[in-house]
Image (cartoon, rainbow, N blue to C red; front, side):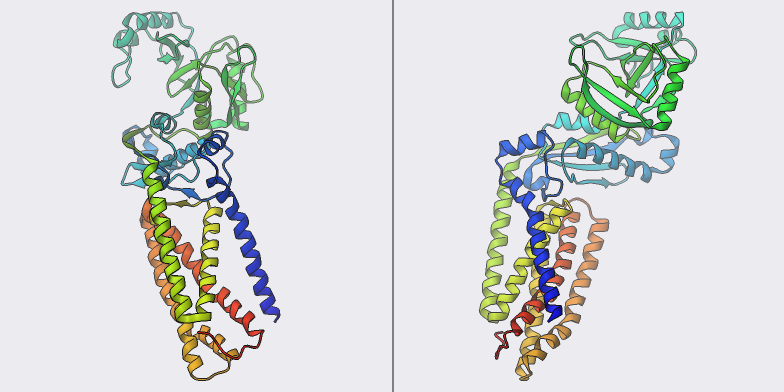
Amino acid sequence: MDKLHWKLGITLVLLVLSVWLLYPTINWYTQSADEIAKAEATHSRPKHMLNLGLDLKGGTHMLLELEVEKLSKKDKNNLSDAMARAIEIIRNRIDQYGVGETPISRQGERWISVDMPGISDTEEAEALIGKTAQLEFRIVSEAPSASDAINKAYELDEAVFDKEGKVHPAIKKLLPPGTSLFRGQGEEGSSAEKYYVLEDSVAVTGAYLENARVETDNQFGQPIIAFTFNKEGGKKFEKLTAANRQRFLAITLDGIVHSAPRIKSTIAGGSGIIEGSFTMEEARNLAIVLRAGALPAPVKIIEKRVVGPSLGEDSIKKGLGSALTGFVLVLIFMCIYYRGGGVIACAALAFNLILLAAAMSWFNATLTLPGIAGIILSLAMAIDANVLILERMREEYSLSKPLQLIIPQAYDKAWTAILDSNVTTWIAGIFLFQFGSGPVKGFAVTLILGLIIGVFTSVFITRMMYEFWLTSNPKELSI
């Protein structure tokens, strides 16, 4: 009896926990489209919820190519590590943007597949993903020939850099030794180019950044990016400013000078700001890519397409409709064919579905059409386990054994077959997850999770129900 109390307690706790985990998902998707858009804009999305995939929600699909030839020599020798870092950085950028659980996977040697459900602005997505975000601090050259090089650049106008980014030979001759010419961000509303001659040595880079956030300046209320270095970076930055007081310090992002303030005094504390003609959205996205880190090499978009949500809505309706129809038909068959035993099996199946949805919400899983197929297959396997148990009960019942012996013996004899069938499917699901990508992984995740929960509900929950039923001293077994 004590064991039964424990089993009832565990079942009740799991049921309450599942409802608690499912509430954010149910609450989110029952809101209006305007309320959801407002919540996403303010990053008020629940921490744990079930996400809809690109095929259900609509959004943007991109295929990116890492420009391997621009990798450092070290990264070229370890391409797998460079690809892994690029994927993680892209994932961090998208996660901070507010798109939860974005499916990102490696395709082949140098390609990365990215799905962004709910994002239809491809230009904004490209800007967020494609930025190399290499932050550097360089000292502005004060050599006399530096001014000559800049004046020459203004004379040449569009011919300053060639297609490969190399500076014009006439300018190169004028550059002081150990310096390079950089483009600067033009003034707001101006299309004129701005140029700087910077020293080649880079004292501090974005690798030492600890945080970057958007603020507004006190004078004009313009968006600025405030950054903070880690301990090591703070020391380097303090040393740099101490050695170059009254000189200009250029802050470059991806080879573009955003600002070049004068160093009036030593800057201690490891913090500073980046000023520029940013809109609030540009500043926010730039802060995101700085926090996430720099890509090991630039990525170029070789394929992009926007998937409309109308297909997703139709798929959801048809998928849920077909799943519900099949679910109801199975319930009816089980109740008619196995009577009382069928009712218990159906109750366990409903509990199985609740537990599975709750588990997926906790893990922030992304539900796709293949994922729905995995759920349906796992439910079918759970019903199959119940059928094995019920058929064993019928066999034991036909031998006129006492009810107190029929139930434990039926479970013991059915357990081997249940375990064998589920283990073989688990192995297949694990290989699908390991070697598959995109929709295949979604199918594998829901299948594996569904099978684990299915075994639990088919063996533990149904047996607990039968044991509770036996406390009423029944005379017959309705199977």
